[in-house]
Length: 523
Image (tube, rainbow, N blue to C red; front, side, top):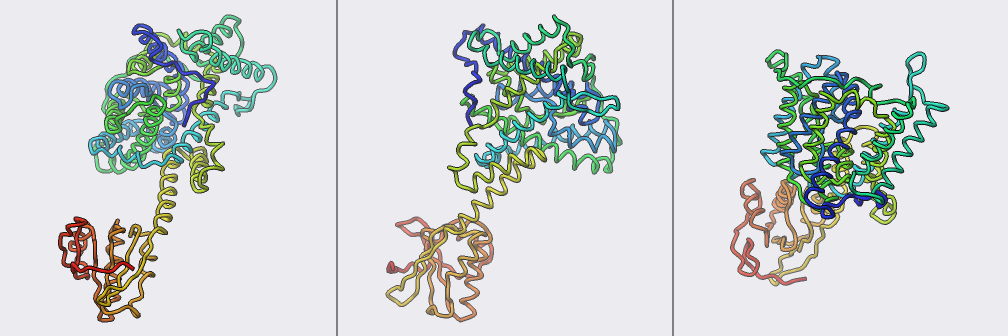
């Protein structure tokens, strides 16, 4: 995936040491401003107090910025987790949510300790393209709620007339400022400049538009330590465990995919195991300090990267600025127009969407194009984790189907009158049916040889297929011999109690097991 060419990225090598510190801190400030409405909105989704979302954004953001697997990533409360928390809070209350977040963090730490994060490399590129495209659409759709206002009955309806005109104009002005700013100066991150310009106009001219304070008050104190007030019983564990497993999986999938995306954009490497541990530790801490938990946020991470954030300083600064807003700056932050933040997020959408995927859909294999579209659609209509799982499963099935068709056989007769089958291609669960159909025990001679020099047995289904084939020949009082069987497969056959009689010897030419070390004639 490539970033949009019309959204310049501040490169770290273009500034000196002090300039780098300035960019990192200002980038953190930009991210913190964008975090406020997101955290409040996700808290509303989860049906908890806005401060529960803000505390999660601060704690998770700070810990992952310091210890995470990729500098420049931003973490906090996310909508993907919030939608799972709704039913838990509704049924059992917020204290059960805090306990769930703690257990979720423990599971994520264990995933990091056992290096389960490495399996993210199994996500194919078409799934990644669908993931970023779907996420860009989700971010875009989430901003549309800011173009609505409550009517007399409290129902949210689209703005009309002057309010809609002002909203669209201010969003457009923010986007234009972000686009034009890097062409004039790189001293200030473009998103921050866009927010500052629009805020100055709105506050200076007292324009009547929606502001951050219209969502909720963000004023509060320091988060305090508290053990979740739930019964420490097995019944409680069975209540929170299913939610914890789902939240841990969603959080890690979104975080690791974001890590891969940021690593690709910055042409650097990231540590998946370290990211898992950092995310888990952050969620354990936030659960004890009254936060709703969180994971990596691709939208805010894109804002940070495009603003020039490359080191851990930008993430740390974002978390500390967010805390400062809660403690001292709520009055000022609540005056920021939502239109400015919507404009920033719209530019994130433009930069996140893999526009190149639209031009390659007719060039890539149809199955890959289908996966891109499928993952995009599932991301929009369900959630990110489900979309990735569906995409990986479909890609795996497609690969298995293609690999299953690769198995082939050539036959020949040895000087001693034995029939030999030269196999090519993998023998696994997908190809066992074709494997069985290649043999004709009734018409074959008493001794049959299967040559695996150009084939490999991948799984237990392959072993079972060999056993089943041997049984077919045994019922006809015929003997099946195996040649050039790899040592690992030979051991598995012995371990599984295979019906095939094999006498492994070391082949000096191939270094692999040979049964009945006999010379055969190629067909």
